[in-house]
Image (tube, rainbow, N blue to C red; front, side, top):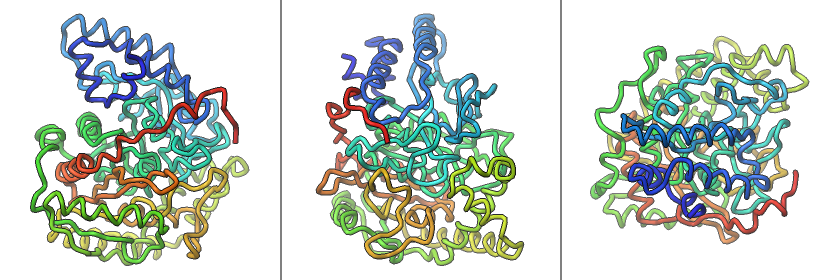
Length: 480
């Protein structure tokens, strides 16, 4: 039954444990065995605390037998991104500067997961300081795509996406600035939600008012995303942007139909370069929404100036978060991190003020756009998973990319709008590479967004296609 447990979604595992048809120890042992089997090849989980996790699972079983109140995730294994602080568990941020760092306190999102009964198995891989949508760093190396291990898993939550795709974890967290929950989900055929700013707060942070970088859940199904969001979205009075808690569970309305919903269909978000193989996979998905009873029409929000706003505010954030590291350890930082910090140092007050003004106008235009629609549907990524040795995409079918985040404009433009967005599996290229579809919801309306995503997921079942694990056995392990 061990392998079967690893294939079940989080909600199913929790139901089995609640019925005492299996135990937390059995669930944990199954996932640890899967990690031992395939992680050496894929490098998704970079710090594993197996003994600690098994002991916590034993305690969870004792607590269940005690008959007291249990949390929503009681006894469930979870992975934590290596950007997020975990007490007593090494947290490197993918940087040689912190290669031996062990925090003394959990980040607030970890505290919430633990309070709900989740058990931390280990840390998932990320690029250095989460910079870039390709998961590799000088501490642990690269994370491989399980559908083709010569390809990128995306990033920056690439380790989490791979671990989920291969059944090493049933649930994980991630962060998203320019697409770091959405891109790896699309590359690995899982589901990643970028919540509204303030929906999932995570302390400590440098700028508590920053709406660009958010934390959120990544899972194999939309239902598991809703489950995780119930736990992660607990309001935090210490976080000034924290939103009020939901009146009821995000799982409550998932299965309602979406007949009559109005869908804005965007092939390329206003003319962004898009690989033809990605376009061919996504084009038939329009008919899926029509088959679900939605009214679908071609429509584009006005996101002019979103690139400028994103690039300036991203660079400003890099200065705030990493300037001291640049002063003290510049030689240890990867070149793209250095570039982003130095771009921020060159900003003038006028450019920063203009970027803030542009962002405000974009948010208002997007809210007006959604007066006519229930969702905007577009590509997650402009390319399919690319070769592992490519550090970032420099060209999309003859269109040069100006810098290392430019190939992800399909995500970063949405980031600037402050609207929630989700990546859902949408099919495969002829060579078997996953492609995700991005669904953007109304302002702060995760509930309707999840309902639409769940309907699409159920109608297509693209997410049921899992990697072939037999090709990923440890004896075939290779290093990059």
